[in-house]
Length: 150
Image (cartoon, rainbow, N blue to C red; front, side):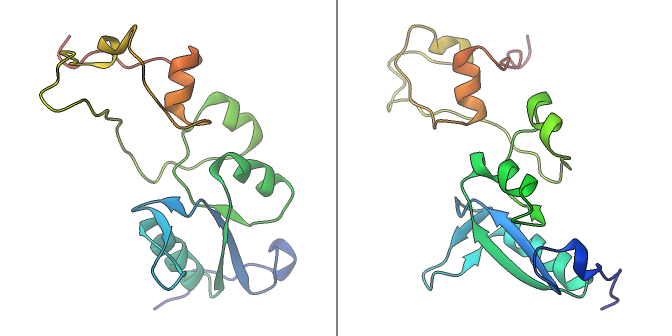
């Protein structure tokens, strides 16, 4: 393994340690395994970054909504979490897209409401997680992508 570079100790929250804020409730990207240790694809990537920088890895379990604030307060060096890159977030922190995903929704077996795309949800009762991009869609802050094929 070739070490890419070494980070000056005065630029890290803890000397010789890459301190990562990650929401450990987001399987498979970041979660706690049965032993309570951070694991998942984001944690694997963070560990590889730390290794290439010649640093030890420390993961802090931080709710996604609090990660930008923790970065600004210099309580973590980087954030590795499922975060939507929005113009509002970019005013607060630099963001690097390293993962791309999509959004899906579940319907009752047999799809009795004939829901086929996002706008089929109009006038339906639905649930989303507070602070997510899906919640922004409901509030009209973010736009829903055009229907596939039309």
